Length: 91
Image 1 (spheres, rainbow, N blue to C red):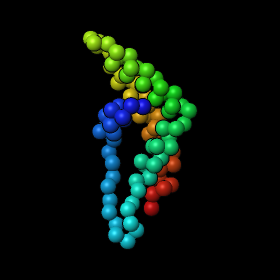
Image 2 (tube, rainbow, N blue to C red):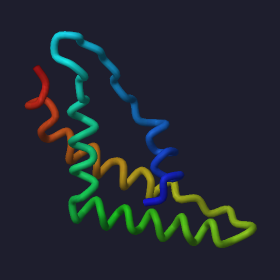
Image 3 (cartoon, rainbow, N blue to C red):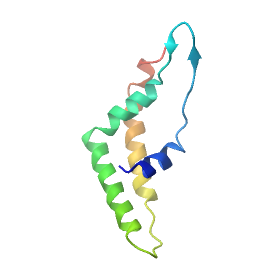
């Protein structure tokens, strides 16, 4: 996926930043799970559809088409996958 699409998507996804001197830098388990979920076949297929839509929209100078449905489907896939095991990683 192009970095501009991923940056756009991440602007809607909340992130957690925390500092703890005793344990070093904390890593948000949700971020790790989302990255792993992006690599699943189902999410990869949806990412390919999103990229195809994005390429199609960007290739036209005037269009009313948007890729909102594809973004929602892709992000839903990632979130659904990550939600299955997220709470097992929390203390």
